[in-house]
Length: 260
Image 1: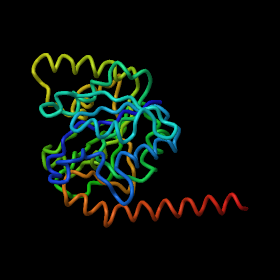
Image 2: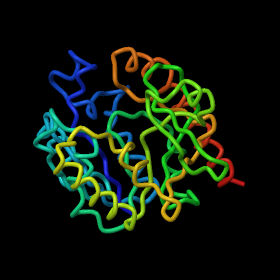
Image 3: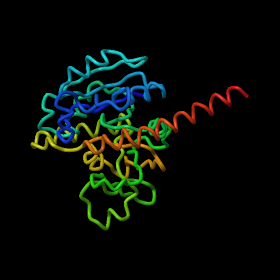
Image 4: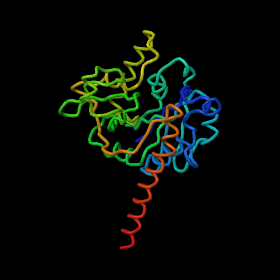
C-alpha cells in the first residue's frame, strides 16, 4: 500500500508562521507535522510515500530528501497551488499511484491509531471520521444504515448536521479501481474550469451503490487539524500531551507483556 500526502497549500490562516515554512513543517515539540506522519506510516509498514508539494516545496524536499527511515519519497509539484483545490493536487499523483493508497493531509496531528484503523478497515474506500469538535470549521459526514456516505460538507443543512456521524479527519483509504474513476472525472472537471474542488467533494460525487465510499468511525480518536494559530496552540498545549501519554501507556504495556 502506498501513501499520498497533500502538502501543497500555502496555509494563509497560519500567517505569519507560514510566511517562512509550509504548514507540514510547522513543529510540535521536537518534530514537524510531516515527520510525525512519516513516523506513523513507517511504523505500520508503509514504505512508499508520494508527497504533493507546492508552496515552499523546496523546504519540504530538503527536509526529508528522497528517503526517510525505510520510506521512499516521491515529490510531485502542483505549480498552481495558489489557485487550485486539494483535488487538483491529488490528481498530480495519478501516474505514480500503482496500488491502493492511504491519503493524508499534511496539517494533521493525530495518534497512531488513526492510521491503524485505516489500514485494518473492512472498507476499500473510506474516509476516517471522528466526533465533531465544534470548531466551526468541520466537514460534516452523514451516512446511511450501512455506513455509506450520503452527504458531506461544511455548509450542509443544519438538520443534516444534527444527524451527522461526525467530521472528516483528513485520513482516507482508496482502491486503485476507485481512483481510476475519480481521476477521470476530475480531469473532466478541470476541462470545465473547475480547478478549486476539494478532494472529499469529488470522492463523494464519485461514490455509487456499485462502488460506495464508507465512513470509518474513530471513536475517542485524539487528533486535530492545524489551520489557524488557535489550532496550533491547542495542538501544542492539549492534543500533543494526550497523544504522548497514550503512546507511552501503549509502549509500557507492550514492554510488560514482552517481559511476561
